[in-house]
Structure formats: structure tokens, C-alpha cells
Image 1 (cartoon, rainbow over the protein chains, first blue to last red):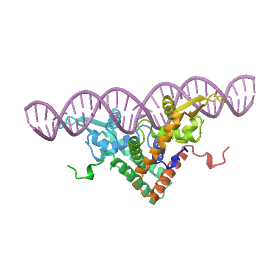
Image 2: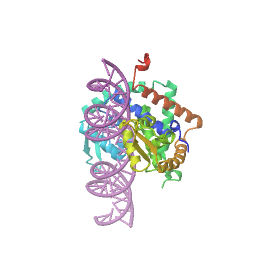
Image 3: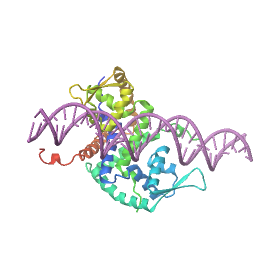
Image 4: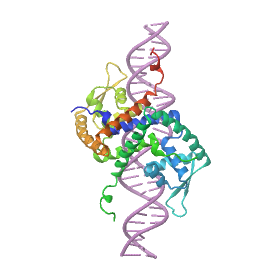
Length: 154
Length: 154
DNA sequence: CAGAAATACTCAGTGCCCTGATTAATTCGG
DNA sequence: CCGAATTAATCAGGGCACTGAGTATTTCTG
């Protein structure tokens, strides 16, 4: 059997895209704070006091991964984690001053990096780029919990 | 400072796309063989006897990662790894019969999965999708070794 | 209200992904 | 020809990402 052409395999392209981004992030944004870590900080700027699971949901990380990311951010003093007195299962998260400062600094750099990253595309193409990727990712995520919406939810 | 909108951040989208793909791969292709592992098998079908570094280059993995992936494939008996008698630094790689058989089986399943993954897009949109991602990834990879091609290489 | 079910988090295990340092082999330059 | 530079692979270390199993807490239900 002949070998497949990986340049038409979306999974392979997605991986290469992410690697390219990883590299550029390291060079232009930060070597200490990673892109997923920034996503967590960003979520807590918009919604302070969220619990761990919900933050994971916002940024698209599962329970285990978000726990690791948060533990690293907490260890570096960028956020505080306290038990919810109303519900002892939850951990509530708030940025520290240092965390807010870091978020501000990286927001600027991230915008610059995105400009460079997307430089090969025209403005119209960028819109299409976002739209296509979002549609594919959303659809695939929707496949996780099948059925249910097909008939009336009970 | 306001929080950024992550849905317009290509890095975040790339990560979500890859995760969605990971999930679908697990469900529809294989729980044992991962997508990067398949990419390695696929490369060795096209070019048997390649050395480790070149395989990494083909599939877009750095020296350390490709070493791990190959060691796993070798441990499972899907490929053989032998020192190049002509150049003692290199390890030359060949698929075993089992490796070739696995590649054939997964090629079929991968094609089916790609259909499902890309189902939200029309045929035209798929072409654009590939083109845009490839251009962004290629450009970012080109930033790694700057200068050189700008003037005559010496 | 007590037991069952659900929920938030943690832990162990596997695999991908990178950098920087080290080792072994080959090639290049004087 | 021999030391220096280059190259392929390995190792140590940090971080992301998932699953399955386990613990603690809360909520639901008979």
C-alpha cells in the first residue's frame, strides 16, 4: 500500500501549526509563561473567583491538565487558590497582583506575536482561517457527548 | 486591562483543533498507535531505511521527541533500528512486517476519520483550510533560521 | 434523614514536545 | 595525519494532554 500524503491530513497540519506557534511564543512572548498558562490568567481576569473545573472548561483543558497548570501558576505566585466555604469540593481562583501584572505585560506581547504569526494571510483570509478552524474544532468537540440533543432531553 | 478574546488567538485555536483531533483519533483509529507514531510508519513506507533524524524532519519532530517515538515503536516490534555500517552515528530504520500491516490497517481508518473530522466543511473550504494552515505553519517554521537566504549563502 | 448518585479534585500512568548538555563518530583544515 | 568543527544520537529536565481510579463533599431521592 502506498504511503499517505500527510499534508492533506488535518491532524498532522494541526500539530505542525501548534508547534510553529509554540516556537514563536517562546521567542516573542515568554519562556517562563506558556500559552495555556496565559489562557488561564486571561480567563481569571475576565471572571475572577472561578473554580478550577470551570477554568478548565473555558480554556479547553481536562481536569488533570488544568490542575497541573494551576499548581504551577500558584507555585509562582501568580494566583491564589482557596477552598470554597460554600462548597468544600471546589477550589476558587483569583489572580495575585503579580499575576495581573504578568497578564498585562503578556497581552501586549501576544498581540505582537499574533501579527507576525498571521502575517502570511490577508485580513479576509484571517477571518476565514478562524472560522474554519473553529467550526471543525467545535464539531469534533460536539461528538464527545453524542445522542442527547437528538431527542428531547429528559 | 480587559481580557483578550482567545477565539481570535491562532495559538489557542490550534491547540483546540489538535485536541479535538486527538479525541477523534482515539475513538476512530487506534488507542495504541498515536497520530505521530502513524506519521513515522507512513514515512518509512515511503522511504525505508531512513535515519532517525531525517524521519524526524519529515514528520516535524525534534531529535528528542523522534527518539522517544521510535523507541516505543521499536519496543512494540513495528520497526527495526540498526546502526549504519557506513556511518556509525546514524540509526537506520525499517518497518517490520507487523509494522507494515499496522500501517495498512490504520491508513484505512485514518481516511474514514478525516472524513468525519472535516465533515463540517465543503470541499472548497477544505482546500482553503489546508492552504491557510500550511502557509501559516510554513512561514513560522521559516522564521527559525533567519537571514541566510536573504543574501547569497556562503 | 440515610443511602445512592453526582461532583470537584487528586493521583498514577502513558505519551508528546521542547531545550541544553553530553557522548560517539565523522569530516574538515592546516 | 591530527586536532577542530560538525553531526547523530542520548540523557536530564520541564511542561502539556489524556484516561482510569480513588477521595471528599454535596445533592438527590426514597
